[in-house]
Length: 298
Image (cartoon, rainbow, N blue to C red):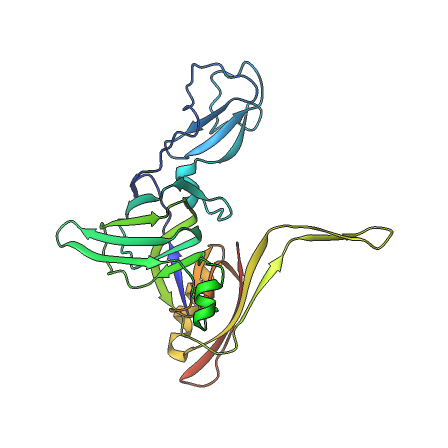
């Protein structure tokens, strides 16, 4: 069982992207905006704002309390860094991002992603290219025979975790999303992984459905489709000597959404979200057990 402790992507970590940040015109302090006009603020916040009144001039969208401006969303380029995984950065024909963290990075995760394949490279200023791998997102789940291979609908994995990046700081990490249509991604996460122990058989994977079902006076049922969140309950066996480290890791991350990976080779076991609770049982001097309940954000 591993989790990726996410690095907050700031302007200094973000290096470049071929996704333009031109959703709307940039806000200018001397321009008068009408009710409903939209602008973007790129430096530091990378968000879209909508004017709430006519004659809107000189009011900074980033500091206004809602009288003059309403925050709409992140810009398309930065949606995959804003923590709202239902909002996707998207671009026709694929897209590319280059990040460079001053901290050691050894893992990467993509959540709510929709493209044919992803290529990840890592380049160090001294040693050159130290990592280059391409990952297909075409799922082979349920393909048990040739009939299924040729006639079952093509399904894509919507999440990917990479846990074998060489541990470098200040290296350029390039993530390339390839697709003949429109490539989309809800979250791009880089950071260091923490190994909590060994996931046990019998893990429970389910969803929490937020759809609404209503019944009228005649007994007719109407379903209004809503969002859903993934949920996982898993037992992890760990060395009793590691109890303190695991407890502190989980405590420190209690308000931080992370990428949780129950099995390294099973993409369906990846959940991005928070743990609801954990319970560590010190079974004997050498072995302990940790029960985790994790609720995803998507």
